[in-house]
Length: 139
Length: 139
View 1 (cartoon, each protein chain N blue to C red):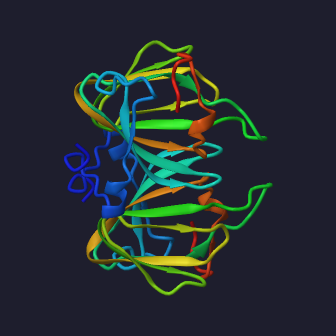
View 2: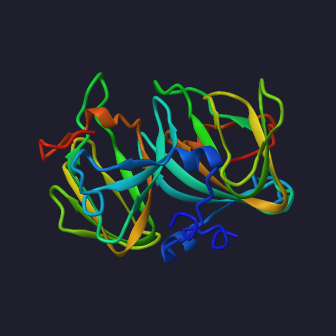
């Protein structure tokens, strides 16, 4: 899916793709694959890959350590993403479309029937501090 | 070149591609095209497109207004880029390869014989505060 979307990875990046199932053991339904390009103190960029119909469960990126929380822009690169952000109606992102999620705002998203590749541009990523609405989730 | 590299733009984005010649009037030699995806107070993401052999002239992103200066990661998406960063030997970026340039560090870069598409992930972009080594340059 990444190659089809025009994304070129180095061999090391291909080896280090993160497969996230959030500790729920239902990867085909609740999960995604993540390629982290860069994650400095100030800037993070990733590609998120979702298989058809796969969902990333609801969560938020809270403030902490003087940081107001992670700000994320999702840009759909291929496929369709349905994005649910607190305070907004459902947002549908098609290739070339994007949406910026403010810090500490609950959100979840689901790929359409062909899956999706999403470029994420954000402030520093601190996955371990994410707050999921489903308390069974372990990141 | 963007389409070949797998980059999908909306019609509005296609209309708003910035053609930068730095006020030098030698675009084929010294210039680039820029698509800005997002530029918030904290995060910026762009695609940079250089025609074959085109150069972006030497500059740096100085500190200001409490900001330590723009931090940039260049990720080569297609073609070849030769990147010159103060304190480093010449860096060659091929598709999937990237380099992070620290704030306030002089750098310039040139596309190889097939041109290049570069994804740039950075802190906020303030082009007007860039400092170019060639004082004739107007941004």
